[in-house]
Amino acid sequence: MLEFHIKKATRLCHKTGETLEPGHSFYSVLIAEADEVVRHDYSLAGWEGAPDDALAWWQSEVPEEDGVKVTLAPDEVVLQYFQKLMESNEHPNMAFVLALLMIRKRMMSFEGNEQDEAGNELMIISSSKNEQEYKVPVAYPDAQEVDKIQDQLVAMLYKDAA
Image (cartoon, rainbow, N blue to C red; front, side, top):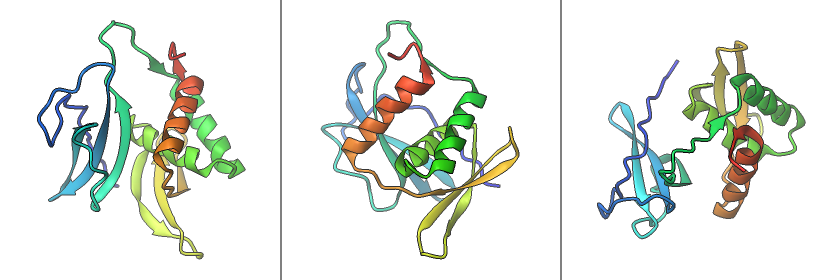
């Protein structure tokens, strides 16, 4: 089993060196370098799109430093919602984004990738909570759809987010 330890945002743009200010959007990219996965954060001005060798990328907002911290719903609730998404097959992009979130929150472990019989790429993840393995279709939603999915997930799964 592969386990990645992804560092938190640096609050510095990897390209320009500028400070990522609270309330401003930024991009994060995961890249395999040697035998580790490295995170690079980019300001909007420094963002030129995800590199070809990126494992994943996402857009975030630097949190305001007002002391209010939003917290994710309990693991069991998030896992149950993910299972319903996987069973329904109605929102594959949301299932993929939620799978990435669960990997980031260490609720799931990334096991690898494979292709199904139709040639579609699948991301294999597992949960130690229910000892199940999931094959999640890899999705490539556009930036607008990613924003919409993130907003939906925050509204559903984060306490004090709305």
